Length: 90
Length: 301
Image 1 (cartoon, helix red, strand yellow):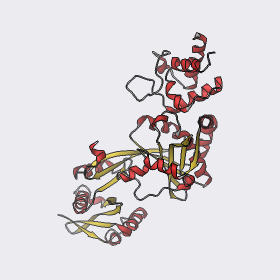
Image 2 (image 1 turned 60 degrees about the horizontal axis):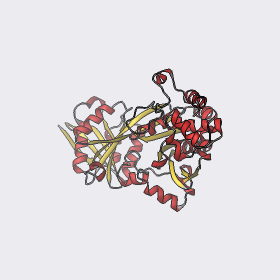
Image 3 (image 1 turned 120 degrees about the vertical axis):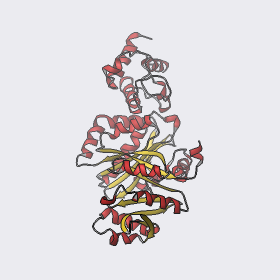
Image 4 (image 1 turned 30 degrees about the vertical axis):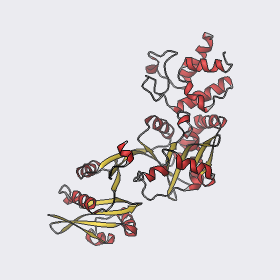
């Protein structure tokens, strides 16, 4: 995957989801963003943020993520991987 | 010495003249329909009273009062114990933690053997600028998010337009209000009836996904209960669409006061709803339920 593509996703996630400086400490492309309902550490963002992410993806790439797939978008890398699997990689 | 005896609900007007409010009168009217009243006397002097009502097999304590100058002498405890001992059915009550006497009442209930049940968070939305704040939120965020949900296949309809198939899905949903009522978890809104033409069901490709059920409390006030019922769609933010459409409907009816109630269980779902509702909410409290039930299957689980 192109680094520019991952960077674009990272930058948009950080700005659209209001990820603040405290959350950014230790943030990586594998950081789990949403509360996934298990014990894994995460940034604690909720389903309205997930809905914001899905809306952001539509506005940036013109792709509608099905509701059943929202749980797959749990990190920057997961979003990049998901989009590339659906033919979006730049 | 404290004695307790049963009496007509209207007797309070004579025994406690000068201590009553309009709220007392409403409680007495309700108790007069299918309930009863208890009166406590301290050394022969009327000291306090309690109104009870029976709701689907459960005896509910609707209202208690002790004269201010006689508080701290065990009057309420005597009333609660009498009610519990004489009830021929499960008995329960609920109260808001924002009430000034809540800590004292909760203490008495537990002392008398009542158990706390899951409380509900209550969010009160009112004020002249409520709908203006809502418009600003919808313009900035809400409409974009609702559009996304509609593209994903979510849609809404009012409960009175729901098909029998959808209604059956609602009855079968593990956390539906219907089942909650079956399990005696209806203490918070005793006797309340859902208002079908302002209650919103949200579906996803024809399947029940979430709902906002509404109880018209008076011409200007609505009590909302929101739930998502499809585990597969948890985290999709679907309740946003249900809340937005329900808000549009009640606004057209001239409603200026909304009360949202939520189960305390499911913290992540509540975090989401709080975020949406923070636009509207002016006050928040928790209502705690108390029960003196025989153990139910749910308690055992």
